[in-house]
Amino acid sequence: MSQSDSESAPRTSLRSLRIETEIRAIARALQETGWNRRRAAELLSISYRGLLYKIRQHNIAPPTDSELTTFGQG
Image 1 (spheres, rainbow, N blue to C red):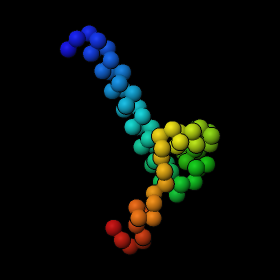
Image 2: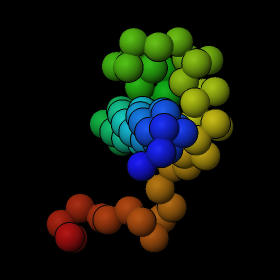
Image 3: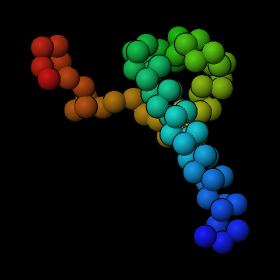
């Protein structure tokens, strides 16, 4: 492994882990609150506008009807 490989690999890896973790946390908070973005922002301790920005930045979308399961199924 060359020096340039060792310098660039950790940054890329750490960044991708941070982004993945952020997306999971946002998605989970939205799911837990039934997509109530104000309550999700409170759970995450971020501003409502900050949450809206992150949702757009990461292209997080609510589940479609086909992705939802009705009570008693699944």
